[in-house]
Length: 292
Image 1: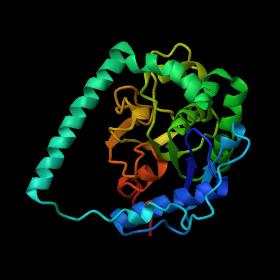
Image 2: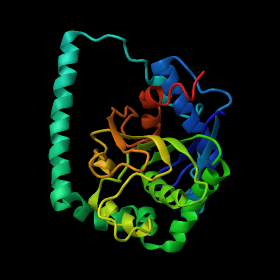
Image 3: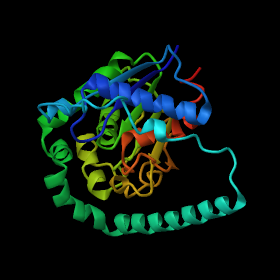
């Protein structure tokens, strides 16, 4: 039985659902061709859990001059197979520096909730959709319904779940809800891209909305059966705590987050969903399930 790919987008207004779905599939195809010289299997269905219309009255509109769905895709060239020793050493040094900086940032966040404290007024004024999700039960239920419907509709097929930004928070809550069903969906692989699930301010709300008020430490939802791949760019401030593996316990299948660091090379935006989707992550962790 072929798996199905179900995706849920991030915060903010979006293009219409059919257009956004096509763009995500284009980005996936580009990443597979770029890194693995493969393509999505034609019998792999792709469904988008679209919820932007519950907060925004009108979707975004593409410029009339736009000639390709994702104009920047075709400017990104395949990486060379080999690098010089100098380039390898430079990349290693840069990576080590970034890792140390990230570790210090994460330690400050975990110990003092510095960035979560700063983010609370920011969340309310500049990210109103996320603020509404945590504080408005009717909005929370409304934006969860598209994902709940799709996961239940395809519960008898292996599911690869792609989630970005705010969509990772919605997915986390939904997966916990559905894990309690008599016949829960089976999420073979869950990808979280640019996720704020590591922030103390976000984790503080999760026990309540997942109906686990007395839980001492959060865990992977039980319906995730094979792997949870958490993907982040070290310069993406939305996921300033990049390591979820120390924040979430393993579930009954012994699955916990595997943290994966990439460079999101979408021009000018290290949080962009397309840049995450066309990275080497799907080619690395989704093979051979989704390709020819």
